[in-house]
Amino acid sequence: MNENDVLSRLAEIVESRKQADPKDSYVASLYAKGLDKILKKVGEEAAETLIAAKNSDKAELVYEMADLWFHCLVLLAQKGLHPDDVLKELARREGLSGHVEKAGRSER
Image (cartoon, rainbow, N blue to C red; front, top):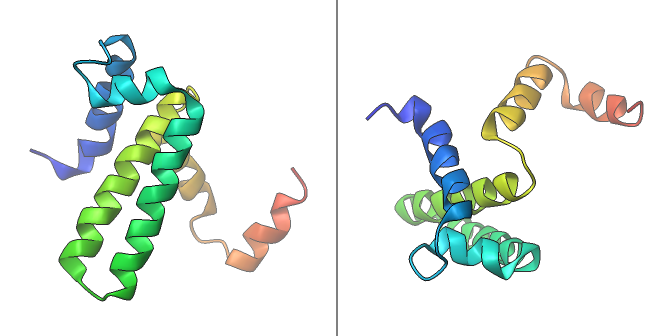
């Protein structure tokens, strides 16, 4: 398995789960419960990631970060977005000072 493509592969799977039976698919059950449930899961996973980072357990941090990223993929798909949209934004920012990038946000 090529780890470089895992976000795209997962995004495709997450997108396909929109059509799945919520009884058979965890992702489909999130979609069926709506945006509030998806946002709640992202928040829960973010909090668990923060705690793992505080605890300085690298394996736990990787595990929790994977959960967070997965639920962020679900959120992106819910909103009709793909991880490539985020990667393009990161590429746009590459090489920019954080101060310069932040100052440019008010121009949008």
